[in-house]
Length: 221
Length: 267
Image (cartoon, rainbow over all chains, first blue to last red):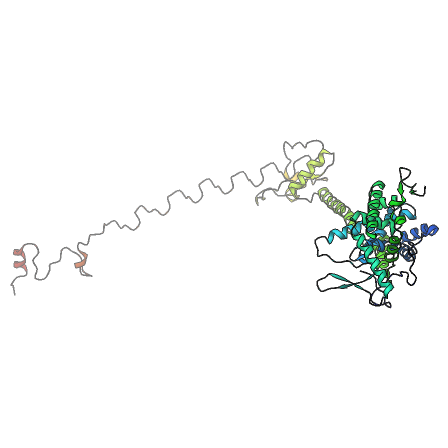
């Protein structure tokens, strides 16, 4: 489910560039690393400090939600809640630096996404809404229909179409390729970190990324 | 070098990935669109819900953090640890009580005798119950020996030899220590309850006075005369002496000659 804000209408649209459209939009970066503040924040979270929880959550929640949205999880917020509960339960067992912490957290998110997909395997297919391109309008039969924002202008409609085309291209990937691309592109993990998160050897991750890139390139042509 | 990136963190030392195979470098538009659309932070409601779940999970996995705020209640584990202590206490109390009763000789006779035998093995001396005495004969011995109650016999290391001859009952001193007067207590030389004769026998069989009872020489109910047969009782008139066959009026019994001569036409 796409998060809605109270004052921005029915859907939250990503701040895509408008007006003069560059050839390539300025790259959005994932949340910056906490750096030196990571260790005390992690120590505070281990002792149950609310501020440490909030700081850690604000730093990594966009990554988790972005990965789950990219994996087309029907209810990414709920699954993300389970991911953060697992994070708290496993804090004592984690050892490593901040980048390893992100890789470990996204590994939890990956397993949760896989579990959610298995749980919904035999259920009627629910069309996941494209992230930030509209909002899901629940139908009577439980399915969801993507409704594009009616207030968007022509440029926004063009951006929506580009997003939809990209998401259609993502849908053409295999689940492993999609997961590797999302971890590499959205979460900005390195290949070894993606390998750790997916539980695969780095060479296999390289192969997945190579095939996914070739397939996406053909789709964009 | 710009065609591939090096990942020195990999255990093998380096992982080479050509830039053409990396979607971040090969597909900048896709990267920007995906990052711009997918990395939206959660709304405030979702954020608060997730943080509350994290705090609850932390409190659930580490309950000792709140232990000092809550009164300590005995758990099942603590109760389980107390059970052996309670059982041991009860067993000890029962054992001490039984030992006290056994030392005082107040246990039932079979139990007391068994405990005394068992204690004798380990060198302890416990009183042994004396079997119940038979009922005292009223004509039996009287005196101090009869008044002295049966004292329990103390088992010692040496068996107590029975006294060959018991002193006279009147001379039996009151024992200073029960059972240590050299004679078996309560014995006066005679079998208790016997006065020399078999009780209840006076030389003759009980209930016999030398003659057969209730016999007077005659058969009961017989007066010596055999009851006369009544012949035909149906024709015997009551109140009449049955002298013989009755002459029916106008009848002829016997010879008709006698009847004609006796009751005939005489008048």
